[in-house]
Image (cartoon, rainbow, N blue to C red):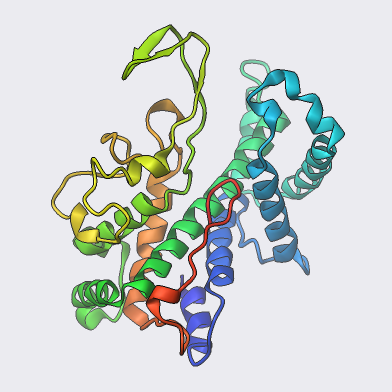
Length: 322
């Protein structure tokens, strides 16, 4: 967080690329957890290599493949080069993840568990690699894109940003800083984050599920074995549930008890049940803390000549929607 604040402060007189700063912040935090060091530490070009891997994985996973929905069409992956691209990228990911020399990192801990339980409950190397890269790929996109969308909405709604800044600065007072303990006092900040997730859920189409029995929902017959994909983006903008659903209004979440953990089916940005996003609490805590720091230390504005109504927030697609 300190490095992010200092970097923004250094370039505060100029226009900055916020996406790059937020990606670096997120990757450094996750790499510290998983590998014991910031992803930008180590060999020359390490950060560029890592960022490239995450971006390529996100793009490949986000590509629509008919074979994922119609098994008989899996041959298309071989013909169009998708399967070869996945195998090549998998080898590069393996090389990157196998470079773990820190005894305090998660990779080392998982390898130790593997060695200690090899006869009882063996953990395959591929499983360890999958766990680590899940942290990076899903965590990186989810954390930084949620924060990026929130900043974008605040830039489009300066009165909301001013109200949020006033709350953060009132809580900080003479400390000149925000701590993790202060987050529970920032009720409007939490509402801003929830409203951002309603309009811009990181996973607009949730992980597929499969019906385990014949059933009927709202007059539609759903056969056993039907693959079901939930559209959380549409749920968050349902006009029968949300008043003015396309407007950014954080106040709608104040004093409601609705949160992002899947307990309220009208609001499921991360899914619900066993197949929800596993790092929800961690990701939201990072986003809230980073947003509080940014609102405390800086006054953000669009570049000169760019009006709020002209600010382009066209979505792009990958593992998540950015």
